[in-house]
Amino acid sequence: MPFTGPFEDRLAIRELLETYADAVTRRDAQDWGATWAQDAEWSLPDYPELGTTKGREAIVAMWIEAMKAYPGIMFEAWPGSIAVEGDRATMRSYTSEVYDHDGVTMRDRGVYEDTCVKVEGRWLFQSRSFRNIHRQHAPRGV
Image 1 (tube, one colour):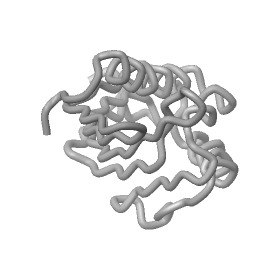
Image 2 (cartoon, helix red, strand yellow):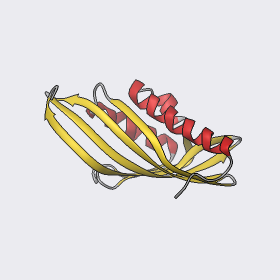
Image 3 (cartoon, rainbow, N blue to C red):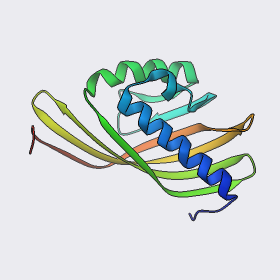
Image 4 (cartoon, rainbow, N blue to C red):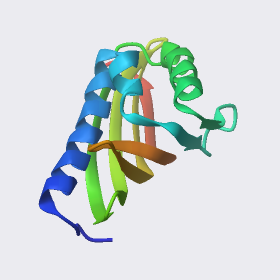
């Protein structure tokens, strides 16, 4: 999937992704939650205990609870593709996470398949589905 559609929309979608990543690193539930559409859906098939959550309020509540397992996280994300068609877009994005947990440094990398929607002039995540690509867990600092 290439980068297609109006440049301004692609830039706004990229900034949506960057806002999301920044809010994760800062652990800011309000800013993170503001990246989601009201009727959004978040799927985490590699984490069956979390599964799929629907609705912004439920997504944020689940994220707040889940973030307890990711102390001191550094979260980065970048797009691999963005295709805009009107007020809808699809994006593939990649993530890199680093955090320490119980004396172990965790390095997780994954991919999101996203659908974004433009609501009242703002791009938001309508759906996100995450899959792991690579996980490295080693003694702290290694």
